[in-house]
Length: 294
Image 1 (cartoon, rainbow, N blue to C red):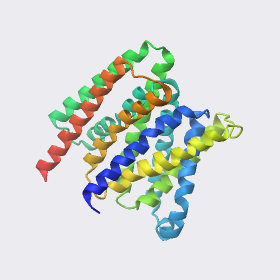
Image 2: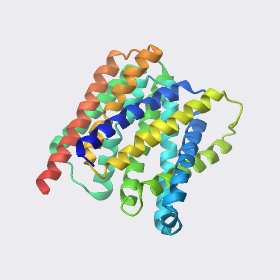
Image 3: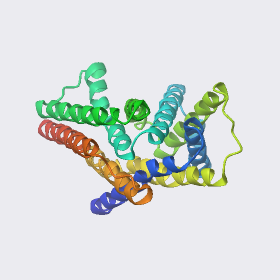
Image 4: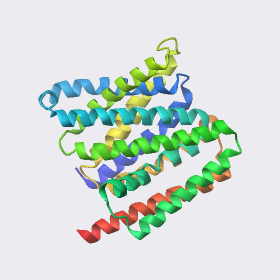
């Protein structure tokens, strides 16, 4: 497929993913149930494709790959729960920017566990992003402990998302996108179901609109957002995907202004800009280092 076309599709995926925080703000279900139903709907929507074209692959999957996919589902479930919790307590601008610091936690894990070197310019970018995160958090502290709690949940979501990314990177060598995402989403749904039961959540009695919003998350944010990124990695660089994803906080913030009248505060604008600039600097440094080695 033409590279330019793929890039435009990826950008469209960013637009779809930007609606995640918006739908998350609209629902009234507890965060763990929102995440559970989102993963359940996503897995069910993928099931026909798995049974039609990937049944043999699914039946012959190796035990190690299966276990890694299940583990990936666990951390993804925690990520979505933390993210949905975050948007209920803090500003959408803060939540989406802090969740996007995922790439920095990926860098830290690669450094600690795999001893992967980070270019000096990349370290500067990481430092910038950390400063921006502190600016956001310090400004939000004035809004009360609940807002700070929402910021911390967004950071937890970023940490879990980074673990999901690293595990997924190893498994995508052996599994198709369809089978991999189906197993991960199904595992996340089962994990979150168990968590909901353990915490005494009620599974029914919510408005039909809540399930409609969650279904929209599954279709637009998960299948047309996250899955497009997985698909796009076949045609464009991971750096382009990561850079494109930085548009999510911008898109979500603009939508929040028009839908909820939620104007970003000065600390969120300044801190968010610093975080995005820092992440971009890290990605550029990493891409340049990879180009020099090739």
